[in-house]
Length: 434
Image 1 (cartoon, rainbow, N blue to C red):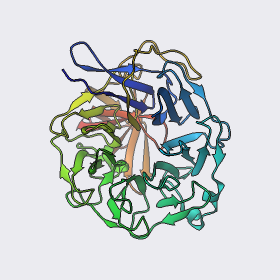
Image 2: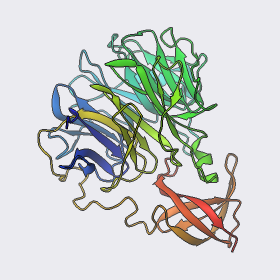
Image 3: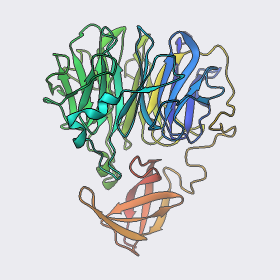
Image 4: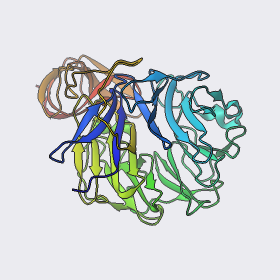
């Protein structure tokens, strides 16, 4: 068997994991620490295969120099430690990390110290930056460094359009002509240096003038698709992958099909899209990665803790789950294959040596049927009236249900609600009121 030269790493609310291939060829998830740190982005150093950075929600910027065996915080100079995204300039090695509230920090010493790119805060459009749930802080959800213009960095703000710097963070300009306000990701490629592909909460948009103007580029996608960040391999940059849900997150729990997510592929740089032969998922798609050495190896991270991996360009798929991986998989990275199998060990955020299923300890499990009593009612402009209660240790809401009513429900998915930061169960109503 010819084994891939790169290994898939993932980050989620419960830590960092590595997809290790067992003797029989099966892929298993192996925990690598940062338990409960809320890992949102991972980045390998191409010059050192054991050096790995992790941007986290609760533990700042973490660095490992031993392939994930131990972790140490490297957040000197980072004021906002709720971190979302990472990027590296391939020519100079300059590192960038994006935060919530929107901030961009730059490091010129390998991540030892960081400097705030303060000009970002002076943009006139910053008064419009927002996010639906309180405290309504936007964030730098994704970013990309231009492969042929090393000082050009593009930021995707959720929500606040796109932002570009052409001088490594000394000055910025907002890119909003023809693109949706709710930016999710950005892709730049060396073969079309003026082309910018942006994914949003309302589809895919493309620019052929460096981002000054955009137009929809979503032929083959659902109307106003809620998209993941895009990904492509530098070996075949016009083959682009993206995940898309039919509706935004507030609607996922209001219907049995949930997000109705699918994976899509474009072979012309994002001008047209084809749905891949994959299961339609009730969970949403949070992340996407393509092996830099093999454009046929692609992975998608989901809101239910699963990762879907294809090694044949999307013709077939393997679901990876378990080993304690739980919550939204917001980080995927194809890193160098480790020479040794590091054991999970303690760092600033301790590793868990006894991995358990994603639902362990929650008093609720995906696929099971429960009878619940609605404890309260809420009403929101987008989702309408919902009955809410606890299902084990997870939150649950049911459209139209009233306080005191009893229902029989099936759990479709478990994941961290990014608006509340708590575990939430997505359910299907089977019967009720009883």
